[in-house]
Amino acid sequence: MLLSDIAMLLLCGGIAGFLAGLLGIGGGMILVPFMILVFNHLHFDQSIIVHMAIASGMATILFTTTSAIWAHHKHGSIDWSLVKSFSPGLVIGSLVGGSEIFEALNTSWLSLFFAIFIVYSSIQMIINKKPKPGRELPGSLGLFSFGTFAGALSSLVGAGGAFVTVPFMLWCNVKPHVAMASSSGLGFPIAVAATIGYMFGSWGNPNLPPGSLGFIYLPAVACIVAVSIFTAPLGARMARKLNVAQLKRIFGVMLIFLAAFMFNESRKAFGF
Image (cartoon, rainbow, N blue to C red; front, side):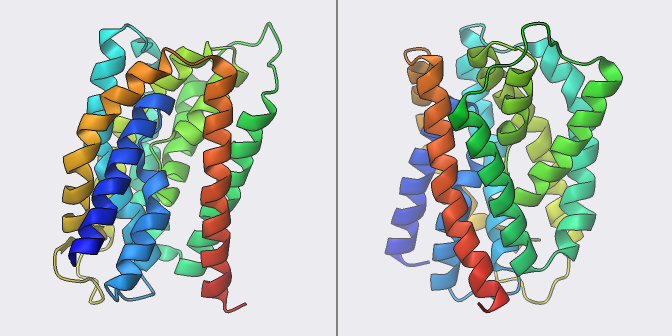
């Protein structure tokens, strides 16, 4: 990698770590568009470039969420009973999505899939629709089922799951700051399972560049993690100073910009 590529990855790592702490997201989804730019500059094979960006972004979540989790846990913001209830489904869904489905999708459809779900999530956060007062989280079976769905979906788009789990928890009347903090804890089991799936699902692919572990490009992961683990606690501290509406709008607007980029990538992949 050139110095300019390293500099971009370091900058993106710092921003992704801060937003991970601020909004409870793993940060991987934010990194995907920027890594696509870097990987294009490095002339990676176009048939796997989106796969590698998503998988590498997810791998960084292993480290970013650890830092964010610790910052939120020190202030008692994480509901660990929620994390425990969601985790079995998240792990199963992430393993299946990260190995079987992810490898089967080509670049154009993967880009489009990524963009559509980001748009949906951004709309939910921006409109700030109030849930019914009496609505509560479902029982164990319901949480397991939703966790499986969220894990599979997150592994397909390289996200820590917050773009699915945060709206769901808010819909079930979980307090917004608790939902966003707890989603950091939910991001870790997703990242572990999906990263394993990415590595073994793509093992032996002849198009992978040197420095790759399956679809995960290790030099990019190292650059991002070197900065993000330090900026995630800063975001977590800022989260306690902002009101709920501000947090949700920041999340929603950020996702719209990501969606626009990925729709364009999908358009180019389809040849339009």
